[in-house]
Image (cartoon, rainbow, N blue to C red; front, side):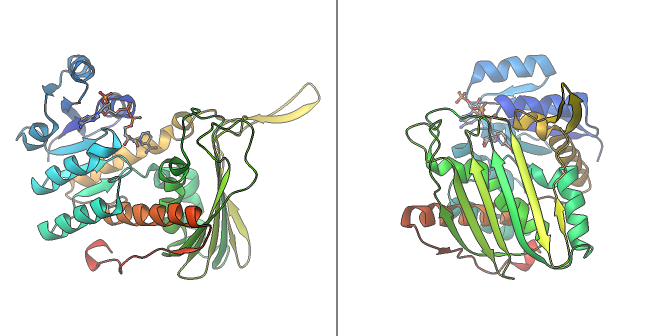
Length: 335
Ligand code: NAP
């Protein structure tokens, strides 16, 4: 295939960033069509990039001038556009979440299997971060022996006072949910959520921090601290503890300094800067794989697993109990 002709549904914040990176930085793809519920916003993007404007996302997906689709609309619209793309037999990259409910993710998985071809990739960009990739190489290569425990932290400096409890799972921890099972090549069995004393800096709708705990089928115990008003920066940590050693996520923003009788290092303050390279690599690899007729990245089944696990975590927090992650066996189609 010559250049991949890409249609983008959703020209909000991350949609625009992806359009810019495809246009200015990446190779092999061109944004030829855009659409958004906010028509004026989409119009401005269409004019800036010389793309065709579609008032309706479904019409964009059906257009013969569009080879593949990126869905960056708001969460509740993901399912409809992904289903449209699957029915049209087109490759689709959907920002996380794949859909807002596990049942909707399941429908996508079933539609894709019925079509007989993997088409869907989900935007879990952590898998493309250089540091996590180096950790995975070390774990896969047996450098620290069999993994026993994984400790993670997901900290944001501050969050909108209206931020809600469920978002701690569905918007923050969802990244670790996908990442860790990929990192240690395991499946989830059960989850629970602990609620430590809450910080005084949190909004009235939110208990902050929370600790998600996951037990895997191989018996690995994972803990994820989610703390979105930590005050000091955007701080993502991960350590895998194996039978004979540990590996830690390198922090690319780490600039060690010595000044004024202090030894220190600057931290990132937002997720876009921290993972900018991961987004670039993610979309470049998606373009390359799509042109070659493959889905190499996190697929629809991974999106479904994340949704089922997140649902179980929310139930576990509400009940104050351990909850099973009820999933059927991963179908051969997705292995
Ligand atoms: P955003 O700035 O609010 O953009 C979302 C856009 O979708 C808005 O322009 C919105 O229009 C539009 N929209 C709403 N309903 C639509 C529909 N039915 N059809 C087409 N467009 C529709 O949000 P964002 O930050 O860009 O996030 C977009 C998606 O990316 C979300 O699903 C989010 O979870 C995901 N995301 C992922 C990551 C990551 O780390 N992987 C990071 C950020 C965001 P209105 O303004 O008129 O409502």
